[in-house]
Image (cartoon, rainbow over all chains, first blue to last red):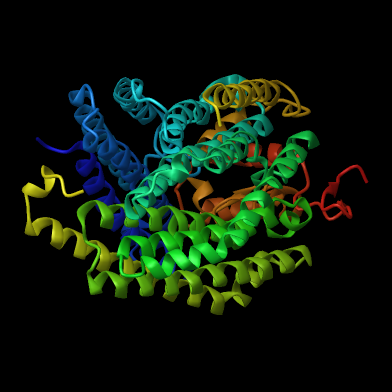
Length: 435
Length: 134
């Protein structure tokens, strides 16, 4: 019987492969705009971002289906297969629309809004399969809460992201942008729920202990995350001329994340002990990397949530560092850990080499983005012209491009290894259970 | 943590989220004046050409080109129009008709009227907030 979870993972790996190619293209075009004009920057960027989002969602969904299939509680499998089919067909239509230059023009969801309908429909199928399968499970571990919440919140916030098609919202540009970024902030939270839930599930499997998934602290952190998902989105729009209470609410709520930072520091020693214990497992290495990136990106997120800091960093590459650091450093590391664990590719030396290339490149990439962002923010606030500022930062952008390309190469080497391993045992890999 | 406690916290948060959403939809997000049909048409062109991939409004958007929030008042309409008409080394010429360019200018003029970004008159407070009243 074909595993739905694995179908989604294959879609995810394919999406990331393409996302990396278009991302490398866009980063080169950022410095050399005439490079490969057939796919100009305004097409390459949405191709990169949409495929990167598809990678995260597809693998997050795959992890959920994998759980339902491994525990043999899955119901209405046919709806799950239909979900996968619609997800892929819609994805292909979105890519075609970008190539043709047919845009809806909303940042990050730049496809025509009509393509949101099949996405929403497929998500209903996902919700039906998930909740019908798990509602009889007693004493839900925290990752089931997270997955269930992520599924519902995505559906709500994705609809919210499309409210601009109604005059009530689009007639006030402030309302439209506020609601747009409200939905985006929560929507990112929804995929974080899917991915972080998967991370907890993987750790449970690696360590053989299920204490955390039922612990009080596990649920406290879940509720802190949920509070931030609901109310901590306005740090993106401090500059939008909406009422101050919207920004103040986000500022206040974002400070609850200090609790998570504090806990990471408090637990640092036990994390290191655990690292020594599981150092031979590639899956654990990637989880450990995600822990470090959580710490760094959370610290950055808290900093840019302070309006006085945000005043200088908003609209600069610091925001890109926040987005890229989170999606690559946290989401992608957890997903790769899940894939390695799921397929049992824990001892490959090639994976270890890729691990170091990816993380070192990401470190340079992240620091370069932050530095160039700070320099850009300060220069623009000093009244320097945009063109002059961009010229001054050219060397930083070259480092950004080179580290971006090596980062992409590290990921591509890893993904080709995954494809190779997968094809070695095809089509059994689509069916058999290795956990 | 008991199941009823989890449910209580969860549904309280959901209730607060719904209430907050209703507030955001209805309060504090109005603009002083409505967008004219021409500006609305310009907004649609802005979206159809995916300008946001490279440009920003209120600092939101891409990083290839400059923020356009106050481009009309800072650089002027003629300057902006010539960029849209001809493109630049970094920006493609989208071959827009005069009517479309007028609509885009009307949209950018409307955006310009809503705020100043970045607002150099903002005073930063000791607790990290921005005092916009000054």
